[in-house]
Amino acid sequence: MAFRRALNSWASEELDPNVDDQPYFDSFNGNDPIRQGGVRNIYARENIGLLFNYICTGWAEAILPATIYPFMTNYLNMDGYQTQAAIVLITFPYILKTFFAILSDCLPIMGRRRIPYLIIGWSICLCFLVSCVFVPQTDAYWKHGDLNTFRDNESLRTVVLNPNAPNGGFGYVLMMMGATAGFCMADSAGDAVMVEFAQREPENIRGTTQTIITLAKFVSGGVAAAIIAVCFNGVEYGGTFSWTLSFNQVMLVAAVAPVRTILSLSSGVFNNIFAVFLFALAMHLTRSHFLHSDWRLVIFVTTVVTVAIQWTVDFVMVFDVVRSPEFYVGVPLTYQVPVAIRNVVVTFATVEIADERFEASTYALISTMNLAAGPISTSLFKQIDASFLAYKEDIAKDTPEVRWEVAYCLIICYCARLFSNVTLVLLPRQKKEAQELKLKGNTHSQLALVTFLVGVFALLWGVVTNVMSIYPGTSCLPIAGGPGCCSDGTPAIHRGSTTAC
Image: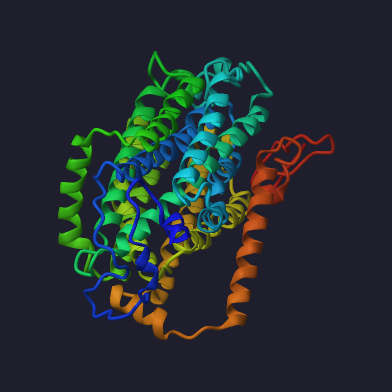
């Protein structure tokens, strides 16, 4: 019995040890909870750390990618295919969530499976962010940052302060990648607790926990993104403000999340005012729209809305209708709402099929297979885009020909995103259908093996080619999305259909 308590332990309140003896799907009549034991109060002192874990996850995972454009594109003058690779590598640890989840499920620390991994994960994140704070910042490539700022003044535009600045991006990517690995470990353990809490809810309200948590995460991420948009917008970072935070200071802001989460998990103290607001809003959204909607329809609509917003913003910028940094950074924040809705609906399906004792592994495996497509898709698009006049030097010319070349790249990208909706036929429509699929669905070992091998290949190919994109010695290779290399290892000058050294 003590062993069972150790396996189940989350906070100071131990769960019912007899829960394990109850059949997982016995007496499921469409309204019973999947797991017995009663609905857990996510705002109780012993559980509030879970909500705060997701708030801080949203904070950290919004800030790190938000530094790519101002710092790596404008300040370091890294090319587009390199910054795309940087985004993939910084978010790569998400694919390792299955490994972190297996540790959490199968390797308790001092009898606990969740809290130790939450604290360890956030501690790792804190260490890497502190490293970013104290590492001296590389000098900017251009005299004042992005070459686009001086498009109309050739003398200023060609003043190069630090020609080796793009090579410095590799070290920053590795440190941010380590920070992401830390909060992904914590996120994996938190996902398991979220699944457990959600499975205790009866069918008519099941999904409330995921909605509250997802809303908290995306509100926090939206606030963080807004702060970066305003405070990391100096001239040297491609903005127009006379004042700005440095990259080191931005990393200090990001480090607030792991410090606060570690303290929260250790003490259980939290101000409930913000939590009560989120609870009221999430309950309204959940009961009104989410719980009983067709999952396929919700994901289809939110995907189309997201693409429509991104498409509009990009084309307005490309064809010089509006080229305001505030517009480019601010308007895309609106698609955080459909993205949040889409993500929470995915968790609904995961909760229905997750087995006891393997909550973290099941949740992380589904997330990993979803994220494994990211690196290889980015790699393929970089190679496709390499055939177009869409490098920084081309974009700086801003000719009608270049605008259409960039537009073609965007059209290919967004058509591929819309085409992904064809896979929705494989998704159950609602909770009951997901339960029936798990109970009555057939298994196919050969198909499972093929799926696994394809996923591994996609992961390895995507990671290797994206690392090549930002590593100085290989960044110019066509397979990495570069224009080609000269005999001395430098990138070719002319892009598009022809290259020359």
